[in-house]
Length: 300
Image (cartoon, rainbow, N blue to C red; front, side):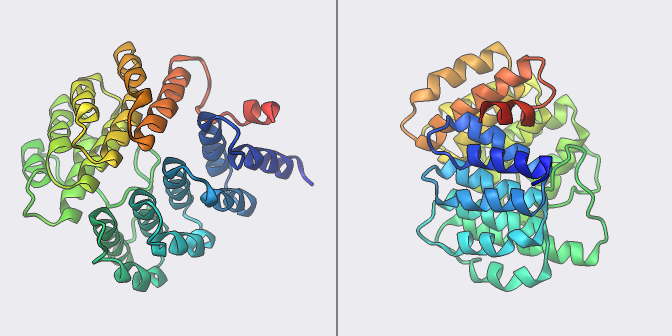
């Protein structure tokens, strides 16, 4: 076995060990995503038997970001499992869209009327994404090195983009395109426009807003993220994403509020705060990257 194969196997054991702290398993997951390949994909796929919806949703996210068609059968299975947490099924649908294989269209179309709005809306977005990219030969990753659910809208006027973003009458695909355009502008005005999106639209839309604010890591979004995290009427997938965004920003105010919600009634939110605090610790340290392969392997 090669050195890399040994490393992947060892990291896969960390990911699939339910006795390990969740934060260590997250670091293992993102290390496997960065390594890629069949063995990494297999180790990630094996972990879908876990009881943590948060971890399983992150597994699906990473499979989508890897853009390996080999992951599609696993993702189809997760999307089709009506017993699975809607947050996990949503992420499987989004990952299928990220891999962007036209052969995925029939299964996505099966779920556009799913009882869970976050699943049905995700499948509609994934269908539109695949159809858009089949006509537009532009599959580069974003400036944040992520595969986004939609392309960015080719528009630079913040006021116009904000009007699209916050208008519930406009197709969700176009509102997402405006969202990513505002992210890419990355000005105080565009970030505050995004912050308004935390309190309009459905849970899927609001959770994506929180994810984008986490990518931007700008402190002006902190009060808005805290307000959404504290709002118990918000869907747990929104609150979880707000917690992780605060972990990405990683200042003392973020640390303090995340500690408050370590005992939240929602397991998804509790675990997100735990992982977010670990992310924040790394951001505040001198580590080269969050998913540190060498440290993980040494700890096995």
